[in-house]
Length: 108
Picture 1 (cartoon, helix red, strand yellow):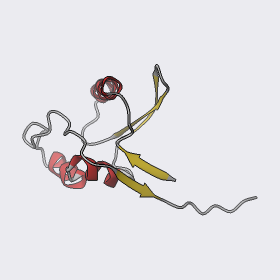
Picture 2 (cartoon, one colour):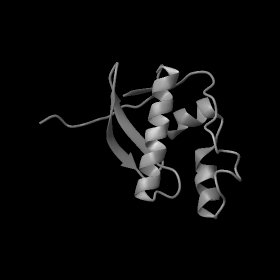
Picture 3 (spheres, helix red, strand yellow):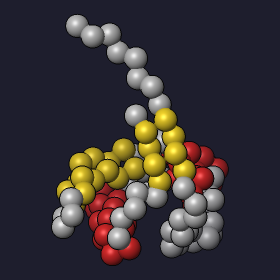
């Protein structure tokens, strides 16, 4: 499995996904960091799932955002806010990050 960031989406699609994620986080009462996953087509996107935790590919996000997500999660757990951490708006993506993972599964 290969994770590549940024995903190469148009700015308006990226903004719509961010807005949908924020709306879902607020509606569900999510506190802390989470991962929202969507299927994206050329003209629409569809919500798949929310994982209320950091996932293995969080390092890809860290590399392009410059934000230590583990440190951020711990700071939020201590009661700090995104505003106090300077994270009201998402940081602009910089560069490209690639992560490759191998899955070993026994075939039946």
